Length: 398
Image 1 (tube, rainbow, N blue to C red):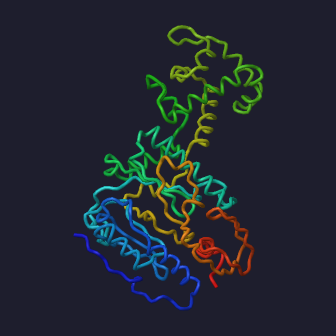
Image 2 (spheres, rainbow, N blue to C red):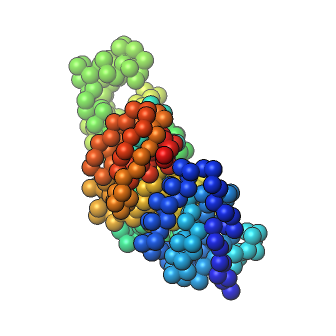
Image 3 (tube, helix red, strand yellow):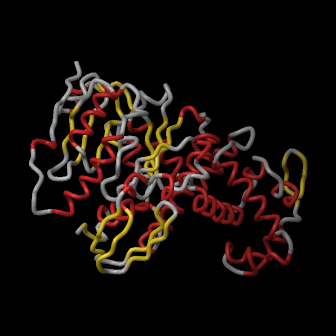
């Protein structure tokens, strides 16, 4: 049985000394007065957790329905709020095995922590780069390679620096951590060696889809580019020196036996599996080069522990992210390309009033179509910008 928990600010009085945090909480309270829980199916089987403005993480809570969750959020006004990706028979139990796990959604978390060079990027640049990885995850891997349909996916802007993608399909729910890790490794391009690619290509009757199809396509394209003397310079970078490159190009005219004698050029410069049965050491060097290029340009930098954890808490749809004040925004698949978090995940109701903020470090950002170039000092700015500045520690309310 699910117990409805009645909580009032986690039983704590709001500190009077932290004026800025109290004002920020008032803004969040304005938002949650109009908020309604949505997009969580079978919410009575989910664990609920939250971080209050004043206090530590609270979890192992349960609610009867979405209406109960709405009421709870309006009373608590949390800084961050979460729900379990798993379904439990007893979600309110504090020991995991006592919750009686029933299954879990498959979750992908993409954010700047896993993007090379993110530490040198602006927030706007980070959002753009993570979106590229998320697009690749959705349309290349989940829909094309793995065959999931639009209705099997729920996509959310995290409210912070990335996206959460949920796979909600019957065959997914019972999968354990090991199976989920295999999916994560495939998407990240882990475990693809030259030996594995050659062996699988040799054993298959035709080029398989996904990574292998991309490897074969680029291998053929690369050879087409370097198959005459003009390509020896590009090829020498792969084979180590110009002499080896020139010898390789000459050898493309030699005949090999593939059922019937055929020039190596004619076999290797067309898609298909047969070429992988006739590769020499230099062909393998080229294949290794291609595999590296394919991995670098196609892998998605997902947070693997999130995907493999069958007890993970994830941000609640429609809630506010406590470090930005932005909405954890649901994005229909067909709207993903046009989605702009700095426009579409902003609660413009904050702009009903402006606020005086002491900016403590330079802030450059566009929020809801308005550019802000704020240097340290006191300033009066619209509420949405003020909430972001304070929540992300660029300043304090005065």
